[in-house]
Image (tube, rainbow, N blue to C red; front, top):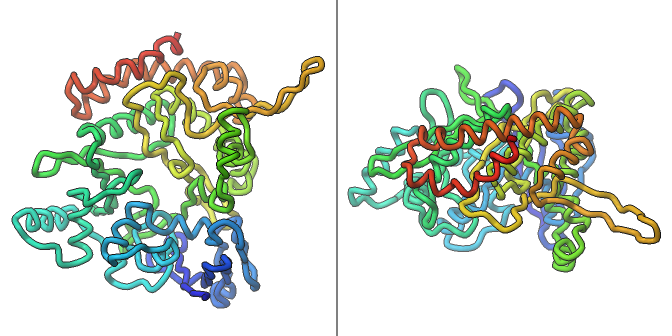
Length: 440
């Protein structure tokens, strides 16, 4: 059975959405079809993304989930779908979630009817008032109250999800991130410190602060980079995750390929979800060689930073792009987010995405196959800089040394300034121990 949803977009500088088109979805086939609205085409409005060009006909998708990746980015993450399923008392599909979730998702798109309840925003003062009432014995009687309770008290968080909620303070929207059961109580402080450290290392990073709740617990407030306050309301910026840009939902990795990556060091799916592929595929989104070159260089700087702080959760959904211009399309890496050092060191630590590709080669009579490198080593980081990310050898070496020196000098003070006690900071000494050697 085919279901259809309107697709709304907030155009640049506008606070009121318009209907860009409709998305028809048949889960059984599966088949997804997007059609631009005639009025949208007549108004000569911009295309939603480089891979969704303006046309009068239908844009079809019949692989993977058959839902356009850009539309999936507008929907809730696994935490949001978990809350929706609890509210409805049943499982919920990603397509259905797109039509009933709050419209505070990342980017400038929303699907389905834009009801008042879906559009409602919550100030920090309102959040605290609702939380105080609930903790005094009140019962959550509305969706909004349930969202507050779930975010602040974790609900029954699923593995891999983090409680979060959009809150407003002083004409700024924040993503409030709450530690879940099992997390260190110092997680917000660590992430705040690492975001500041990334900025000191020349990386575009989110602005964040530790937020102390009345009961003494802490959360992290991260300024939303896709929302801007205007006198008449909120403007939204278009966003695409690296996961969506690479269209990773189109083909699910097979078990055999995952085993091959572990034993042979290369698979096509591993290459598809790598930094190497991201550096290449972002070209059609960057709008020109100059922007593409600078964004590849910025990407390598983030790879280096993740390696130095041992942030091993740098998966494709933890990278994304903001649209700076719709006509022509110019997209740049969004400010970096979710930067958290590992709590323990693996024997051979590796990033979540391969950052170097070594093509097949022939040595004498022996033929070596292609390899993907995700394991952290200064040799591979420097080689990758020149092979994939637009750096000259000398400047790459200089950036690596200087960044290592900054990380070595600043990780302790920044954690302390964020409010972590000495014993909590000291637990990361072994994680950062290798940085001094790189800085030499």
